[in-house]
Image 1 (cartoon, protein in one colour):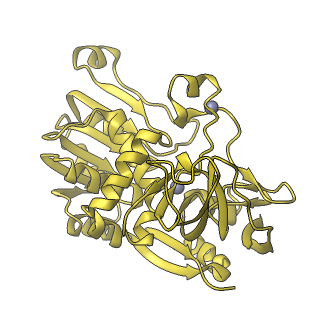
Image 2: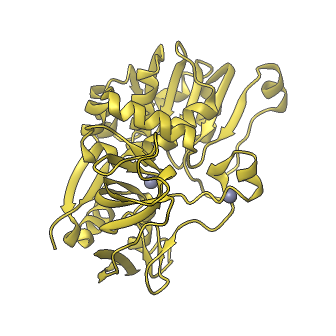
Length: 339
Ligand SMILES: [Zn+2]
Ligand SMILES: [Zn+2]
């Protein structure tokens, strides 16, 4: 059984690891596919110097064994099920977890390889994982199931926003997260969804993917006060988002931002217009249930297909990481191969 470890900027090493044994409440999953996200890109580029680490947090696979207490338990995943994996470890003990806000769990997240190297679990061939963190997806293609984590984050974002069918939606940022927000708000019955991005290519692709309108940030700033929900899925555009919100509107700060960046809104406008500014971070079990149902429905399958930039075999994980650090991509995937 192999795991890929990022050992420094531009460096990845494939290690042999012992085959995992399931705990009583766990299942063993053969990981079939794992997406490469911004986090992995930043590790490999050296932007985030945290080494060594076995990354990969957007994974899907097949259950191959079940622990004693969950084997045959009604509702629990069964051997042979195709599943998407919630790789957050959610302690259920810290203060946010006790409030049900497990997206904000303050307990150290993750797993460890045999020598103690920190592991998220996605860049590994076989993983032992709590059965409750594994969500069956029916016959969903693995490449879609591997988008379970980013979809669940966006489902969480919609839930935080209070989005309802009939709402007018603007999304700032036409990257993979912006596009998932587009897919979810469209199937959720938005009356219109627009995508704002400085890149002409991304605007064109968002239009093909079903955006009702697309705009450059300059064009969008002339549309002040017209949107019920504005999602910021880019590293900037926060002032624009606040400007776009109509009375009663919500701005969701979905992306990560420069710690120095501030949100500015007149206190009186916020009061009189009941503008909400909310953050969205990670996902919770409710979001995963919703996500696995959505994946099984196939409703956003075409949207997901459009976000697949490239697929690399596990043995070439370094090439996948080089790809995402060398050019803009939607999602690049690492898929199981035979060693
Ligand atoms: Zn991610
Ligand atoms: Zn916790």
